[in-house]
Image 1 (cartoon, rainbow, N blue to C red):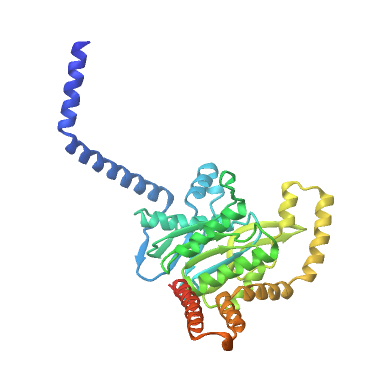
Image 2: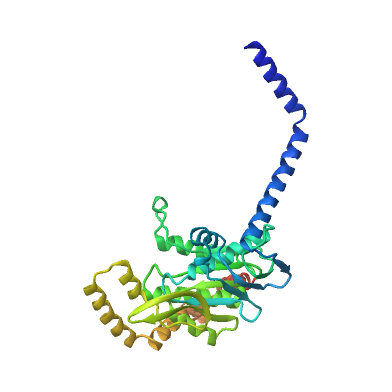
Length: 349
């Protein structure tokens, strides 16, 4: 036992003595192991070398989700390959508004684009035939539904907190993926929030963004704002059913096909029939009416500080004020105006 302890202690002493050399050797082995693993994956899965540029663009051709692509190939081989899509964010069309039914592949498309950027900037080849990326300083994501009961935050509160952090932190060189913003509240409120966020990101942040939504009314924004391009996930309708193509095409879709998805999930037929009746009635009432209501809702929220100043000015009785009181009022109103100017300046930055 004493002999074993002595030998062990000698070994420990030798390791401590050579610790710097050993650390460098282990680091070198780790780098070689990582590079070899990435090279093997790139060769086996047909990845390509990404290119980088200074312009804030993204040009991915026939891009694939790295995880789902590998899973489908391992399970089915050549029988079912992952359906590739392009992701092109240019100077004139940097904001992509994506519509389409549930399960059509919108979220997968958002995630795969973000993952490819992470892979490229980490030094890995990427699952695309061609990939050119302007350096991304931040990658921000708002996807999925989750609450934080312990902190007293509902699903919608979590969603809004994350959205708030994104719109504050995003820069012109950021890349955003936003999925179903505003779906956790009433239709008008949710649509108004989504509409205003789109406007803010396009006009003030001007960053590359993939924005998936079921609010088809937002598709009208491409006519009002420069930088937006409408895209949709292609489907084929056959005998009251839909076939997902998982292919991205230009233009917007006018329906979400939620009832078709509900049918596939097993909702009873009487409920589905009644849902179709209600949907037909609602679709007759909406269209331009909803858009008009949302625009009024958003407009009523603007220029809050200016309204405060005007109201205070109306309430002033000039003849009843002493020179000192009048000067104090002027300083108070100027302070409000300066705060408003600073807030607008920060928004532009």
